Image (cartoon, rainbow, N blue to C red; front, side, top):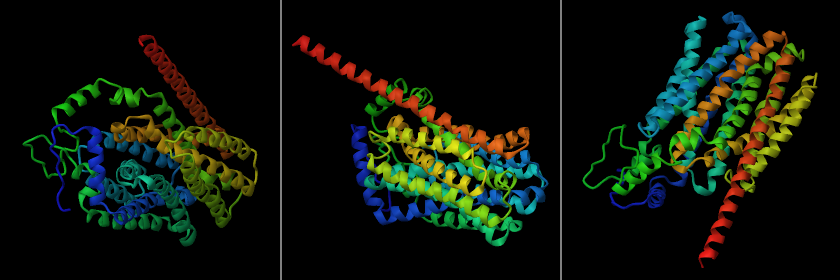
Length: 478
């Protein structure tokens, strides 16, 4: 199909729109093509993390080569997070207003190009600006990956697709660490070059694909009678179909389906976002400072032992947790299943138990063992939470809500983690106390999930009471 199909039925309801959209999607995107695009997106997701692995594994050499203190090195991670905050805000602002394909590919290119600055300058301020702009590019990808799966993924394979996207995110850090191990940490810039070349190659492949494979609205935009479709990348994405839809749109602006009430004042959405941010905070701080902790507190200097512990406790455990979480998620009926929230609470409780045990370990082997179990359990809850958070808002708000979710994830998780860890380490004078407080922070995520559970239970009781009341009223009328 070369051109987009345009519907102009004046009384097309939103449910009919979704049905027609699904039919159109099957025509335009075959299963094999969807899997191919998903593969490219997963590879992009993984390569975005290579620089993180490079910085983490080469922390000692990079600090020495660039003449950085702990706080300055930690700021590299935090400034990247600030850029991600701005990026998530821009994604929310521009969502449905500009072609996601070009916006997405531009952001990926920006991220990789900023890594080139490390080849041409050692000045701290310039490198901070590069990390800031790189963060803007990264977060657009993180925002878009789940949205693409939600819009184009086959219904019965969506949980698997979400799992693959989450799994791919952990691979990048491992690859960055592995590259430094093979070529030597003193050649850490070659790791950044690997990320640059890989991402730009994938960007070129995606650039060759039609826009309609990335924007479902590009090939399904119901228009009013007599209207014509604009072909620029600033096409009218939002559905503007009939007077009825316009009235519904105006009503929605004054109902619980608007952004303020459905997202910003939605306690379940905010608490699940906070839970995910605690998981992100702990994970990013560990990813960024694991090598330093192993060298200074556990007194391990052999790179290969640190790499094995890093791989087991952070990368493979995270991937295993995501894979296991995907299986469990499918078993409980998907991330919007009846027992999804209960599963998250149980996994997070067990994660907190092992977080406490980690703080008592004094050798690399036992710390890595308990930390691996901790990260498996954390990843299970995080995977389900990533999909569950979208079920707490109306369907027409998922794009905007996901951008807001990424904004909160960056403000509370990714952005402050590296710098806060560095500040705590500098304050107490050792990494042990910093790692201990980091692990205890995980308990706040459990507390947030319990509150969500209580809110859900309260709503269920209210609905049952309303149902009973209506039933009694009907009986009295009869």
